[in-house]
Length: 222
Image 1: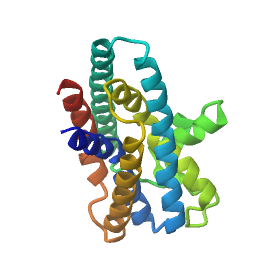
Image 2: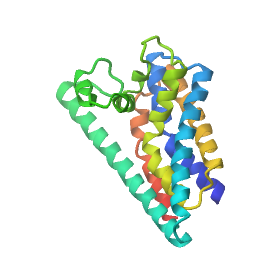
Image 3: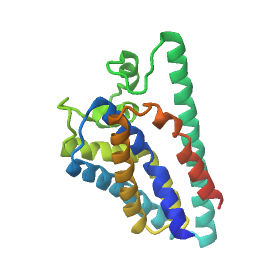
Image 4: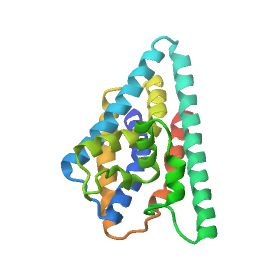
């Protein structure tokens, strides 16, 4: 049961990699195997850090309270992900109705560019990548190099940091879980690249955006 829960968690926090992979596949942006490994390692490191602090915090609490607080964090994170997915879907639907185009992976969308410009440069880069994954190709070479892969890996793990903190408090191992996250990220990004390159529906990531939230809520309740 613990192994299944760990796999479900890894799948849930890695599912955004599928959408990113589809975006790159559709744009014909290449991710060499070495860059793909760096993406997965970066995400694993980010999850490891959040789980370390979650485990450290839980060690100061009685086991029953650590489990309850960790479960509550998972439920809250799950609800937040569902809310963000719903808001993103509503905004996209409104833009499609008003302007007649899709914003999923649109190029040169000036309104999106205005939204993501903020004063903290690195954080601004991360937010842009989360909104439009193809922005990780900073030099517009059509290939994700090692540096771009590292930034992308951390960006894809940003929304999973709270979940990693929570599962560590519930007793998930901080050693195997990040490995599972890295493996799932590798599989899902690779799968997304294949689907995108073969012109599979570009809104696949949008349709699956609610699933990670549902899984986290279930893990928090069980």
